[in-house]
Length: 613
Image (cartoon, rainbow, N blue to C red):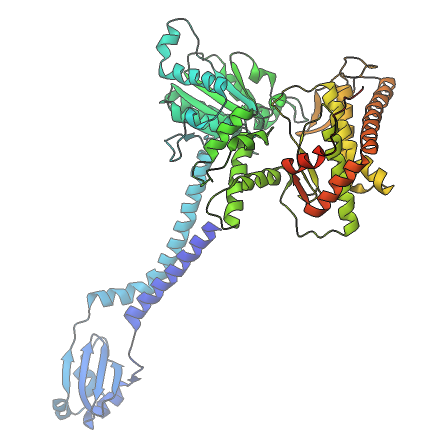
């Protein structure tokens, strides 16, 4: 599109230039009449001509009546001689003013050359534009195998490890890499070998690319960065050619660091699909393997790569000598989340009463990117309400928006449907607050968010990395609280419990097949973890158990769900008055925060019950 616009401009400019040249040399003031030589001789004889200007063979005539005319004389003869041949009387010439005008050289040559050369010039310009585009295409063809690697040159928003919260062990590991390149002597003197590669592993949003930028900001060594997808092309051999060019560029700048983002784009396990051994992606991977640990072992290039899919990487890429170090980036804990929130609150006007610790408590499982988005959403909320600063409630609202989607208060529900949703969410909240091992309720709402008609927000009291069987059973019972509540109050069930039932089924199956918590089946995992991959998509998991065991698994899954269902029924049936009180309050206020919910159920003096398995 850009090239087409450029060509159109060239064409318009050329036509304007041609029009200007023609107007310069051929412009005339009106159209004077043309006289023949005989008519001119008769006019002179009659005394009607006052002046004749001779310019070469061209005659410009001024008549006594003020009119102008033009004529031409014979090329080989003089003007007077020609006029005498047409009957001019010599005495009549005394009354005519003759003026001889030398013909301009520029005008002469322009009148001769322009009509013949102008078409050639236009054609020449056209061919010049075509050849220039062809040269551009040829130059692109010659640089097609070059890697589009970029050298870090101190970005405006330069960051260091001080701008990355948490990840203390990870930063220490990466600082060693930078220090090795800055001060290699102290490591080489003791016999340490420079690491070839560092692989950053972690869920999306945990800060892999951010850490790479911090390394670039910390180090005083050249830092090249490129995306894994930039190696992959539809043409054979381009990927491996770009890998060779990348490492040649890096070796000339050694010691240096090369960062490959999203390496799983080219590092997928070979032979996993139908492409065979000559697939372009596999050839690119082979070239990386050779460059990282081939015959040349004296290179001082460290490759840092990032991926969130370590399970699909080729084993040859992960062996010692290539990616010697694997650094795992976990989701931040509560202390790290608080520090991350402080970093992302820079540049935002926050109210003095804001407690970021409370926000950190409400965001377990959030990554660094989630928290950055959270603070941005809070600022948007405040600006939308024309506030001068961000308050605590704005951040709490943004948590729910990130988790569930925006509020849909404009969605008007019939009174009956609103009552069903209120009892459904009250059932979840009542079961959660009645079971000892369940997470406490932080908020209950019947305001629609995203695809959910209402929601119950449960958060753990403290940060945990392990969950017990009793906690899983409590989760199952809480999931079924809404289903049981609807059935008990309305003697019917709605589609509102469909997502809860799906969550219950998935969790119960994982309890049996993945966590080995079934007494009957014992501590065994079922189902092979290696997934079949076809054209990059996971479509199946291999079964490594018999049909009889599959039937036993189904029975155990149903047993866990039935047990949780009985627990939920027991709680809701015995505490029906509490259920109605919560539902009534929800119908009035639509949303209950933790303090309001705790104050409501405190009057009923509920005692948590222990789950019996």
